[in-house]
Image 1 (cartoon, one colour):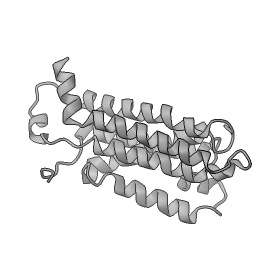
Image 2 (cartoon, rainbow, N blue to C red; image 1 turned 90 degrees about the horizontal axis):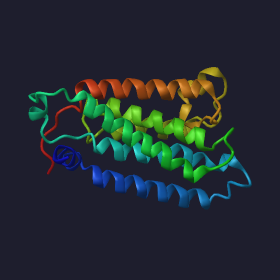
Image 3 (cartoon, one colour; image 1 turned 135 degrees about the vertical axis):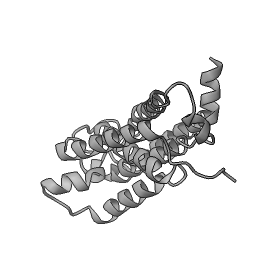
Length: 200
């Protein structure tokens, strides 16, 4: 049990869990102020941005201060890395839909779960390529660009590239998000976060 506690502390998991709870509370509060019972499309900002915030929180927990020690460990690290990413993603995917209950065919829980998977996969991919500290940046840039410019996008291709802005039932958006999560989780599990200097 001491090994699990040390692992959790080294990855700042208690703080990560608290931040995920705070993100959920903020999403619930924000969604409650949108009068979405009048128009479910008003939920788009919450459905697009809450998973982005949660993925940034998860991305910061992917940092390790002992990359050299991790590489020399007797046991392989990929199962721990994959379990950490999968459990945090599952927790976020279970909590964030509380903000958008109902309207499952438009911008309800399915869209929130899909965006959580996609954003977290994007962040995990960036952690492996750029490092955990900057892992939030590519997903933030992409989702922000799609949010700002993807409102009028239509057609089959748009359901793929504008996946954060699509209703929950869009198959192309699900394919894009699940593919991103699979790629990000596989790369992060295989190589971990890119080594960085010590935090100041």
